Length: 88
Image (tube, rainbow, N blue to C red; front, side, top):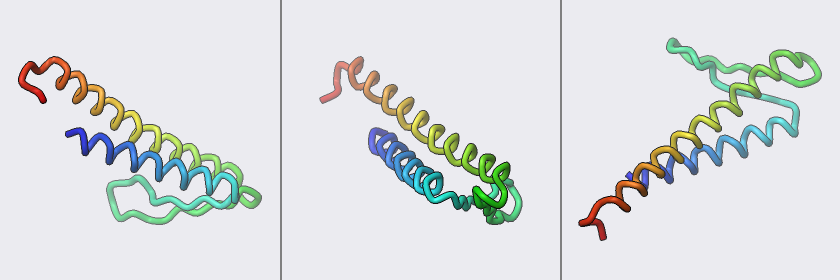
């Protein structure tokens, strides 16, 4: 389980790096979060600032959600190891 927590944290780091790169360049691309057929959403900061802000908000929240999930899982695993008398 500790490996899964670290994987979630690494995914969050990769998503945050991608979001920061898109924030700097001003060109955002993301897959739609719908349950149907995913489609690419594209926005340019100069051409469509409202759509760009919406996509960037989605990307930052997605990265934060993965980080929170990884941190939550890691904290529970570490707490369980600390309380388990048979853990090595």
